[in-house]
Length: 255
Image 1 (cartoon, rainbow, N blue to C red):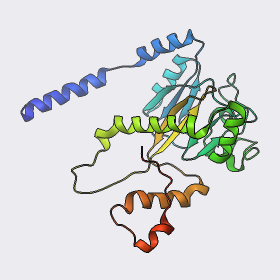
Image 2: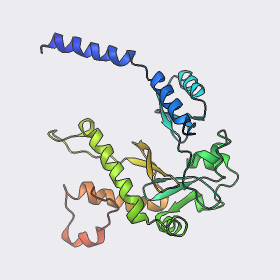
Image 3: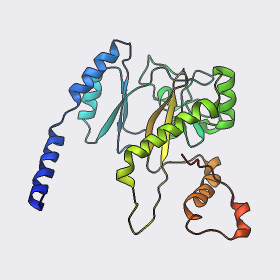
Image 4: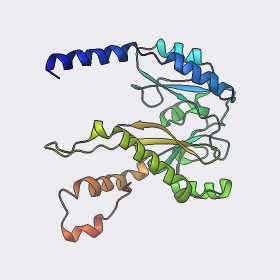
């Protein structure tokens, strides 16, 4: 294929992508799930952060109109309507060894009550009267969560939850490998991603989103920093032998 043919082929691909409209497909899926009493969807701006640009609705036409009225690309996801709940019947999500918890009771009948549905710290801190009531800074770490799972769901964090999380992360990187692979290039690089997860009331784990510039719980920051050094720096620039034992900290799993 010569340069002109490649140019025309690329133009055709771009035209095909431009003409593709997924609204009707979304409507069909929504109608099918509605037969199973699954009505709620969530739209997230790809340019949003800290809970900004998120809209939750049980009316798919309202959701489509909302996205069309914004000058940003949005991702539309099925909203998990049967989440696992903490004490006080509150939602949570998981990122990097910590649960980000909601301040208020999960209320599926009121989708406008943001602090009931979104666990972003910025939103909870700004809008929730109960911020910090149940957990300091609305954060629960894995040690406490492990006890909660055993006592309330007869589940084990290491055996039942973390394997699902590792599998999802592995699948995500496998799917994106061609876009992030640096093999054969004349440099080495790395990036820290933040994976957010939610669990349903049966113990099934679902991916919420992947962040390219994630925040980290302050309590975990020192060990996370050292883990990055151990994982990405030491293989290329080994530390002195005398320092190896004192630097033997790594929170990362090889999956």
